[in-house]
Image 1 (cartoon, each protein chain N blue to C red):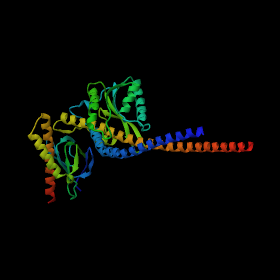
Image 2: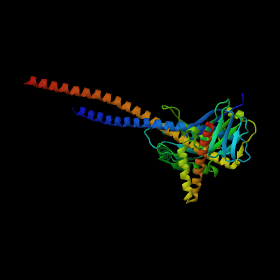
Image 3: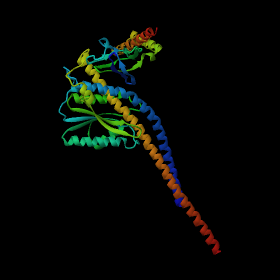
Image 4: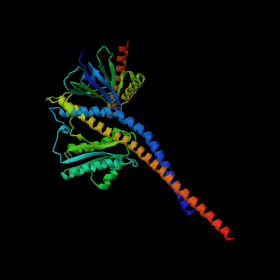
Amino acid sequence: MAMTVHVDIVSAEGELFSGQGEMIYAPAVMGELGIAPRHAPLVTRLKPGDVRVDPGGGKPMEHFYVSGGILEVQPFRVTIMADTGVRAADLDEAAALEAKRQAEEALANKSGQMEIAKAQAELAEAVAQLQTIEKLRKMKK
Amino acid sequence: MAGAKEIRTQIGSIKNTQKITRAMEMVAAAKMRKAQDRMLASRPYAEKMRQVIGHLALAHPEQKHPFMERREVKSVGYIIVSSDRGLCGGLNNNLFRSLVKEVKVLQEQGRGVRCCVVGNKAVAFFSRVGGQVLAQATHLGDAPHIEDLVGTVKVMLDAYTDGEVDEVRIAYNRFVNTMTQDPTVEQLVPLPEADEEERNKLKHHWDYIYEPDAREVLEDLLGRYVESLVYQAVVENGACEQSARMVAMKAASDNAGSLIDELELVYNKARQAAITQEISEIVSGAAAV
């Protein structure tokens, strides 16, 4: 049997996932990470994007969307603390599109420095959500 | 019949009080559900955060964050979480009592104590007993927001960074179940170490790989850590408050009920005595004629 590592994904609103995984993919600030069991200890920040857990044994991949957070890796445990997170299947495409439109609009008639930064962050989040939805759709086909 | 009338007004006023306590019981029961849901939802996050921080305390980073350094403890800072409103049984007083005990021990050891208080009851308590209060936050409402707490927390953490306090602890009521609330004091900074089992796994000398760099990641992580733990303490305390109030108000309603029963008995006796007296007066009057 292939090696697995215990994975916990929690957000401030509740626990999303707790179980074994053969491989975990997460969107770190420095680029996407793939983590296998017995990975060296690591902490990093996450940016908005999708987290995937491969439970192994031919079971389908688990998809989650996180809006940012912290990833901690220990050889025997992987913990993802998301700011907000949902199972990717629960993502709302219409809401994400609307959020993207609004963020773009806010960016277009930019006013203060703070607002631009906020709008950019919101835009990045909406785009990441849409990408996650897109990926999930491709998988299903 | 003078006594009887007095008793009747007394029964009336107790009935009114009972109505109020019963209404409060029901309101608390409804709020308790929501408060418990809120608490249970954020518990896993806080638990994981505590675990990760426990690991971090065992790491050997090349760059030490001030929160990770243990200093000689000359004074201790407390963040005290209480409820905004009373009528919730001994909830706040139990917490304060266990706190006062701890503070006494610290003072005997010649250590100073500073406080940051959350909730009206703690504010009132500390203005009564005195004590150095650095900051306070009140009127958080039923659904507290992290933003409302950030200021208070920052004051305490700044005091830590400036060396005014060498340890920060948080005191709150931990929710066990509806009947039981547990006054708890936990260490916030410097980071508490992981439990025995985790420690054994991490005995060797090691450090994390930090991306992008250690300082930035630690800053971010520790900020989140303190925020999430304080937030968790506040929501736990909120759930405790509602359930304690519900139980207290239920007891009050029951007591009012038994008081009314007793008074009704006394009232009936008085009424009976008055009737008997009246009859005997009439009879003796008739006999005289």
